[in-house]
Image (spheres, rainbow, N blue to C red):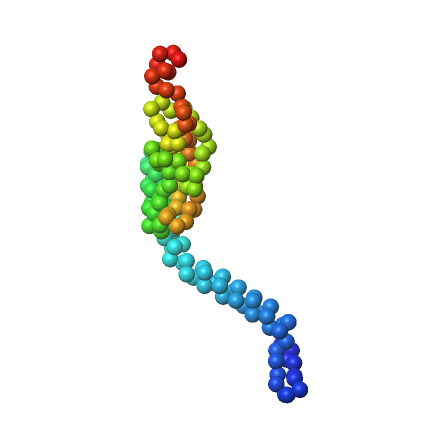
Length: 154
């Protein structure tokens, strides 16, 4: 690294060389520490992968057993997410929340208040502070058909 000598005899590194090297080193350190800090999170997924491998090895077995095994692995994956603080988001009967749900459909649903989730198309996952993915839902339309008028033909 080039050094600059001043009239007083002091030596200084040329900042044009030092600063980019420092930034590169800092980014490398942050990247590696970020991965190391999250290793326990990634390790939580290893049993899920093990069980998927086991299911694939037995793919020629009884189809009913395979379906049951895949359902168990899916439940296990949901438990891992919940243990990490990212439980399911969006359930039938909940009020629609645009911060946590995406409305894919508005449907007429007699007897259900407008703005209520009537079907979960794709579940979301998140916690109080962070949403991994919003739920995609069907929502009861506000001002839907009146159940009394629908029964008498209008």
